[in-house]
Image (cartoon, rainbow, N blue to C red; front, side, top):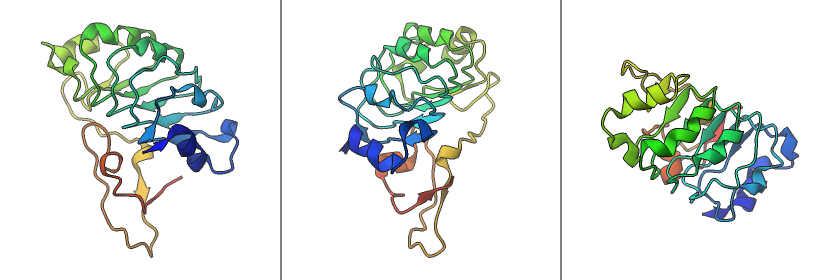
Amino acid sequence: MSNMEESIKREIGGREPDQVERLILDQARCSDGLGQLAPFENLVSLSMNDASISSLSSMPALNNLSTLKLSDNKIKNGLESLTKLEALEKLYLGGNQIPDLESLDPLKKLAKLEWLDLEGNPVTKVADYNKKVFDMLPALIVLDGCNRDGEELPDADDDDEVAFPPDSPCKIPFLSTGYGSLHTRLGVLSCARRLP
């Protein structure tokens, strides 16, 4: 794993932080907290899957952020730090350690939250989990990939779109798991380039 500062530099190239709308820091070591994200005020999408995150206390107020991916980390609680993300529509917290419904209470303040992924968290074992979460978050349309009626809905998140150059030896198809994507877990798509 690389540290967060190195990952940020590699991802943004020569761009200034205020020019960056999408940032993928999967597998970056975030042991120093999330304060380094503060200059990225125009971020729309942030992915920090499998990034050793255990605390969200230093999450800056990113006013334009609509998609946040924090799957496969060590998050148990502290979701109140996400309430500053007022534009948040999609939140991926699958594969963390969120224990109970009370830990989700702060998400009630996210009025635009429509998509929530909690697969693989202990909270999903609570009796009537789906109904209780939908009741708790009235704006929610999708929970763990399904609507209130249990119908599976595809995630059309363009962060997961991958294209291979015609001359690329890399021909591995993209696969998505319930929480976190295969490239996050195995790094098998390192020779793929992301679509704009």
